[in-house]
Length: 310
Image 1 (cartoon, rainbow, N blue to C red):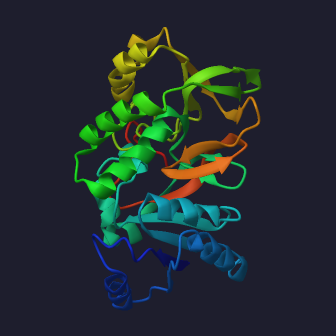
Image 2: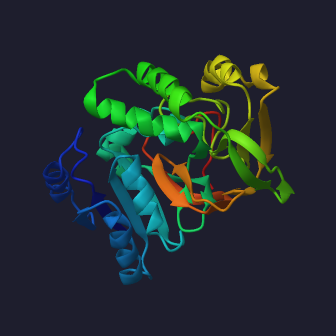
């Protein structure tokens, strides 16, 4: 098997790119290649080239960086036949890792190299892969505000989001008129947010689907209907921590395997897919069950499932 490392050198909280290279040089009987990401999206180009060059060989791709690095590595995969995906979490936050026991081992390169594949669910979008979550609406606007706040101030995530909630409610609070289908059924309406979950956490502090795992074989879909400003502010914390029974008057909860979301008037929307913003007219996805060969570091399991191999 070829082991191919894609390094985002801007992410180096555990090991720098040179330290990763030095570590690999000392491994015996280990066939590997190492590439640096030179710009955002370069990961996908590198992976695509390697897929074409070694199309007859078994490959394990190591995404070395943050959640954005992993997103772009996955974009470059042509198919998962004869391929495995490993994530060396070398900086930033990754909500996807909240789905795993002993998640700190994703920062241990030895444990990762010795790890075994588990087959997880993922969502195939038009031109990308979603492992964890997809959102549109108020929570996407809030995340954008939080990122701007944290560039200028050092704040705890919880406080930053409450400040973003206040600012967005003052300036950006409005529902989107959305065309939505889930498993072929129409749910058109005015919504403050729409959230598609393959995992339990997103945007660092939101756990609305806290019991979900990426091996459930279905998606949790949450649609917050148009409501008053006061109801939004009252319900925000219940949504954030997953107490959804308190939101039965404003929240539609669905299960499904495929979906389409678009603006009813044809405008482009800002979606957030696994922490990466995507601008498009329409977002559609189909759940692929137990289809991504994701490497679990030695000693790591999926929360809520004893055995996901095979």
